[in-house]
Length: 265
Image (cartoon, rainbow, N blue to C red; front, side, top):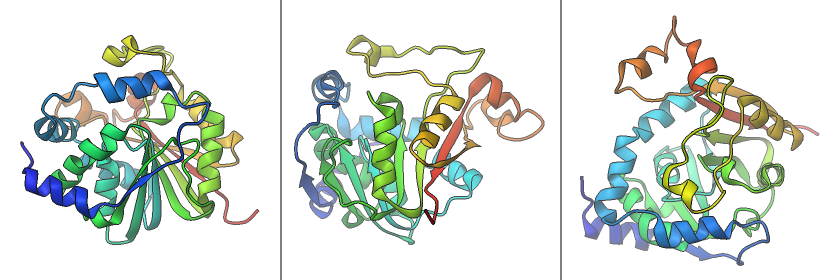
């Protein structure tokens, strides 16, 4: 599917764009170089929608929110927002007032994000794009009801500090949601990093216990919830429901991690 250029231009105009304060010492320059110069999007109007649709991302998100009992509302922040597909899908929820999407790749958030927003039919005016490092985002503290990340937390050079960044952004009672984080298991101790692995060391490996420990260290009450690997194969469908759902934990490790900031100190 190709998105109309007029729809993309409208999304880019309607979605506010804010320049950040530059890069912190922890920002991964190798990853930034990859995102800006190498990441393969030769035909963005086709490639961005194809990625979203082939990965079944909106359907996976809906499953994850139901499984975790989450109802996003109010003020949201997405850290490491990439093409902003997650911000776009969340912005479609009527209970969400605004999403501030933080991404250090100017190419991704200025050129590719409007394509994702237009493809998903999201209200672009609710998505405020920030070209910024997620360690030094420039947003006010304690202003968000939810902080989301999509397959980005494991890229952090200092995940403990990043978890604290999310804590500081959240109001008491808010939730930090890690979506589509790759997770290793005793039977799958590593994974193929593909093209990204040839351009730096920004792909890291964590077990489910490690994700939960990182959230706990920052002060969160952490939980893991089953996530959907997809619906297109018999294996993916079978492991979403009993009696084979137990296989997820030992073989596939597809989870959503949620850290709750306590409502009171």
